[in-house]
Length: 256
Length: 218
Image 1 (cartoon, rainbow over the protein chains, first blue to last red):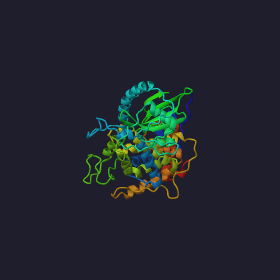
Image 2 (cartoon, each protein chain N blue to C red):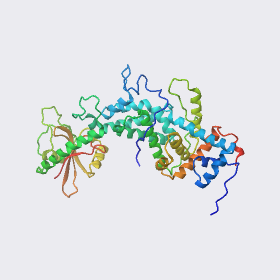
Image 3 (cartoon, helix red, strand yellow):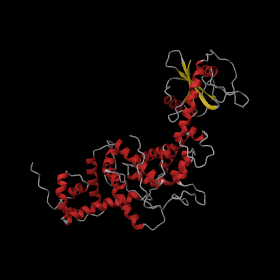
Image 4 (cartoon, rainbow over the protein chains, first blue to last red):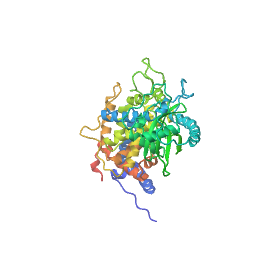
């Protein structure tokens, strides 16, 4: 195969730029470089392109150059970071032997979640067994609970938790109260959007019957009752008050 | 493809301009008690809800500059900067401490912006330079007038490039990624990156007057 003759000077800037960028066929590249080096004008172009690369490299290494960030951009970032911090609150506020009072120890968010998941996966299994043994109590029981939080959709204010009433635990009674009064838990999951995000995160995106704040193994939790995938049944889930995409742990669940 | 986390980050040549009274190198808080960048990042990873915001406020202006330089337009710059900082917020535990925190954040922002360009390839773009161009300000107190002026001119010339050429050139010549890495980040062939870099360099060489009498050539 006969090779094409190499281009001759004067070389175009475009050709030299492609040569400089190694964007030509190897055979042509090999032919051109000796010709370019022998041509002062072509070499000047190559040196100019080298200068561009060098100058841009200097720019990249200078981490002091700055442009004042617009206030609206900064505000948007800080809102997003605040929301992210709130979503991670269980990891931030969850004391563990590794993080309590240990100077110089860095407990990462992921490590904290992993520890929590290990603890609660056991608790969830225990809770599941306990919940499965519960019998559904039909109708309102009329028992006054010491509510930690929960709004009655009939407009009446719930009794305030004053520390003397027993805290609500995960039980058939608490499930029945949610079902009969369609209570709404207080706090973050009172927001419909947050609740929906939680249900999606825990793979329970089904019609919501109600929710209520409870205590689960000594920790704040939320009991959520949704329609089950089985007809004429409901599913009770115990989740964190921070339930969402970043915290999709289910502490306990049961179908009734 | 999500936001890539940094590869081996470069150390900045200029080490000035850090938060007042804080030593990044020694990690020892200054006399006024301000925490270093690394201490803030560690505090965030340990659960301090305010540490990360305090940290990024120190670097906002530089990171905004980087986002502008590496984005198709102002809106994309704002979006990718936010996306990058959220990624850093989530992955703070992955910071190995072998570079300055600003360098680490800088690289995350660059990767975020290049990834956004890759994802938005079909979107029309407008040059990021407006009537005022990108107004760069020096952040340290040293006399860097001549360097600053040159940087300003280079930045303005860079901002006048078409987005695809600017993204390729920023990745390769400014940020130091290889052609192969850049091609992967931007979702195009390596030859395309080389071609875009070639065109962009030629334009800058002429714009910056590194090239004399370009009109005499074919």
